Image 1 (cartoon, rainbow, N blue to C red):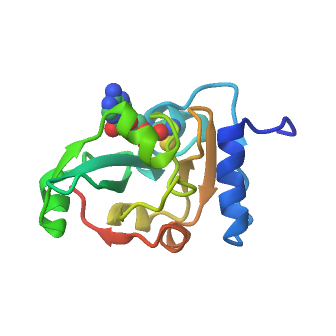
Image 2: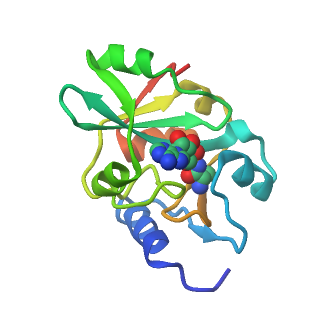
Length: 159
Ligand code: 5CA
C-alpha cells in the first residue's frame, strides 16, 4: 500500500487530486486487465467495474470515450447515433495516442486531452464503483456521481 505508484498510476492520482477529489489510486500485485479480474480483486460485482473504452468516430476521426459497466457490451450504433457518426473500436496505437495510456489500464480521467465522454447509466445504480487508474494493476474506488463530475460525461444507455 505504501509502495510508490508507477508513473502512469501517479498521473491518474495527480489528475484526481488536481480536481479536488480525495480518492486514492491503489496498485495491486495481481493484474486487473479485465473487468472480471478487477471485480474478483476488489470483491465486487463485475457490474461495479467502470471500463473505459475508446472508439474512433467516422468520418471525423475523433476519439470518443465510453465508460461502461463491466457487465455490459457497448452498442456502438447507439452511441454513434447520438453523435451522428459511426463508431469503430480503436486500435492500441490510437488509444495510446489520444489518452496517453495503454489498453488494460485506460482511466476515465487524466488523458492527454479530454475526450468527449459517455457514461453507462447502469453504473449509476451502484453505491460505489471501481475504475482503472493508468496501468493493468491500478484501480480507484469512487461514487458514480463523481465519475460524471470528473469527466463531464453524458449519462446514457449504452447497450
Ligand atoms: N483494468 C481493467 C479493469 S478496469 C480494464 O481496463 N478493463 S477494460 O475493459 O476497461 O479494458 C480492456 C478493454 O480494452 C477491453 O474491454 C477491450 O474493449 C479493449 N481492448 C482489449 N484488447 C484490445 C485490442 N487489441 N484492441 C482494441 N481494444 C482492445
